[in-house]
Length: 453
Ligand SMILES: Cc1cc2nc3c(=O)[nH]c(=O)nc-3n(C[C@H](O)[C@H](O)[C@H](O)COP(=O)(O)OP(=O)(O)OC[C@H]3O[C@@H](n4cnc5c(N)ncnc54)[C@H](O)[C@@H]3O)c2cc1C
Picture 1 (tube, rainbow, N blue to C red):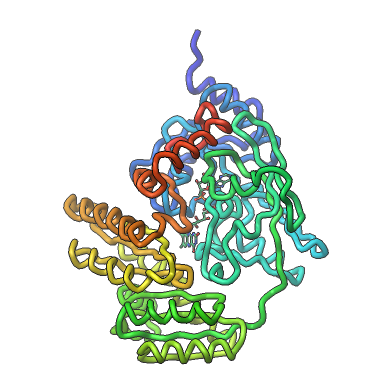
Picture 2: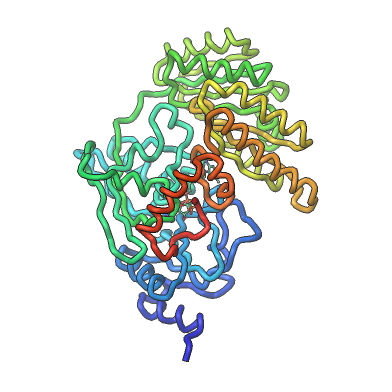
């Protein structure tokens, strides 16, 4: 007699403590989508919320035995469809694996994957240390998700992205084996760098069940600069110029449409007519004054510098508010291209032309200091013409980035939304190489099928 899906799921339920597996449709709904809420998301047969590594291994071994795809999920804040469920999969959610343990003498944190980024930051701060990577979602995204997407963020322009802080990983492989990679040392060249192979692998090669993260001493109190510019080009040129002599710890750009979105949501007297606004932070007041001069040399209309941490935080919050402010405008496609920094002025203008050509509203924010742009392509999902044009814009912006020597994704990952464009960036040989690695680690193709490459 052939077993039904219900029997197969029941066999997983039987192997785990009560409450680990959920399978009611209403309970499963929240495990189907990432932050994009794509209506085409599949329906899982179950979601597992393991409490420890052994329970993860039980899930993965069961999935391998029954040929069930596994979509690993942190907190589902991803913006590229990476944690989107596929039909018939098991969603493996790390939400209940949240431990964080700091070793201040070794300057490392041992973390479980479901710990939120903010929880790691807070634990590090309590020990007098600092965990720098700070995606805009740091209060709501998991460390496992940050590692699996190699998340960037606001202060990465100086401090580097997640990969720079991952010293060791515990990974459950597709056949259920547990491997320990790297450790707590700052240097390690024993064999191939498999630790880094898993960073940014978007749940396609293995499941991160633990990480050892590097912590550093906290930076000094920050000086903050806010400057508005009459043109996109002048703001971009100021960023390029600043990078030659200064090392800001934040260099964010907010364009006119994003400024207006924030003002509409939370009026705070921003200059609605400015073409762009830069929000920068620097470790030393003298550097902030030097940046002020650079901005003025590039025609900034207003420049404000403060050494007061509360004032500074207020300006950074304006940058953070650009996300919620665009979300309340309705549906949008989330872009994440990155280009060599010197291409920033041209690329900002080229993206603006795409918006004009296709008659779409495309607010842009950028981690400008590292050339990473986030155009949000607004459209009405009920209007087929606009949906088509939004997808055209999405593709055209990726091509603009590629033509400028850049990448289709700087930090959100390929996920499912950018998969079709990946061959155009990396070419057949590199794609084959990626697939060989995948086949070696996951021959049955069960880990996050359809995502990445
Ligand atoms: C308001 C907002 C601001 C954002 N700002 C930034 C930003 O500044 N920088 C940035 O980089 N991103 C940003 N993001 C995107 C998102 O928060 C990041 O990609 C984040 O790293 C995803 O973490 P998560 O826990 O939500 O992962 P999920 O969305 O749950 O998963 C993301 C991917 O990681 C895989 N995955 C998750 N956990 C594991 C694991 N333990 N093992 C293996 N694979 C796993 C999933 O399968 C999926 O492919 C933002 C998102 C929002 C909503």
